[in-house]
Figure 1 (cartoon, each protein chain N blue to C red):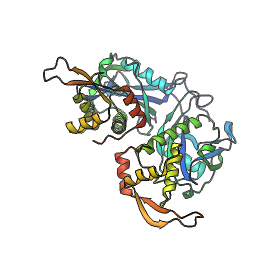
Figure 2 (cartoon, rainbow over the protein chains, first blue to last red):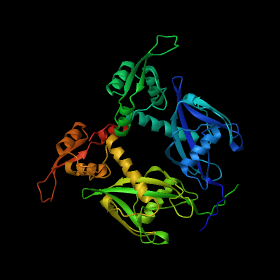
Figure 3 (cartoon, chains in turn purple, cyan):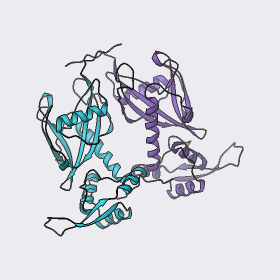
Figure 4 (cartoon, each protein chain N blue to C red):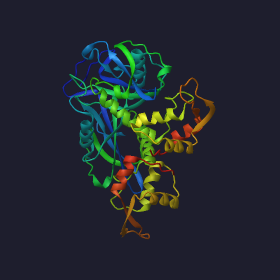
Length: 230
Length: 230
């Protein structure tokens, strides 16, 4: 039993990326518009075939950069999706990766199989090809679980942020409204936030205090885990 | 760019199973001895090729039963492993699954590509072929994280168990010795354990009280998560 592969591509193995960002008080996701093929014109997760001589992580970074221009992010594997029905013609196993980023840090440049690239608010995500909406649901559930057991936001929020921004991040991930005093009290108890002794600039409303994460506490809580009851 | 596949097998995709059991106060893992091929005579994780027209879960259940006789377990995906170096000749992506079971519930029957099958204490696991030891390390870290944030043991312990058995399970997964009074106090506070008002039978030492899990509390804590600080 031998299978012959072309030198370049294994078209039974692909990667797909969930690149989450936070901007304007809402969780966002980076999508690309297919330039060609059966999904031409449709918005989808940035993804593509894995090359024959390429590791999974390597493929993920290459495809993401080629399609969207986004590089220097930290991609982590979620899991593999390999239902027989997820792709037409034959089963294609895709390995899903995710990253949490600040959209403003990245210049978006569509390329390779993408004719366009942009951020979508999670609630505006269209019907995507293949099982991309299912992969997104899996990723969102993963994030919901994550925020209950680890600090989150270091890669999503600006270096200095307000408590309102932090609360909006949690609300956006959990899809619930949180009680403000309760949220703040619980957060303050964790010693995770350091006051910058600065206020917001250039805002129409009353300027709020700015905070930053205590990196040491953040890393310790990430390592050790905790339970944040909302 | 077309790739031709044989009808039956895709030899670039495999599954591997981490079947954890708990017996004699120690965490154990189910291994099979390769009957043939480049790893003939070596002990390894139960695993095999995924068929062309087979879902990932389906492949995992089929391969596990064919190699070990173990069926009616609940397999959950860990993640995919696809390093270029993990398999000789060419890259084979494997999807790792895990399960937590009571060894006594299963009759072991080696078959298919396995000449033998048995439970190994985690500390007695031999050097395995491919990256199986790495997959095991990943699985053990996953379990360590899991026991800190969810109850564990429902599928690993007998229906009625002693507090010592429960502590041994946690010690075995975390690879640390725990303080007995402290462990018991923390566990009792969670309302997870129900006294059976029965004692152990047929033991040489002083018979200990038996407990069972409160299924409702167990499910709620699994859903909600918590942090168990050891």
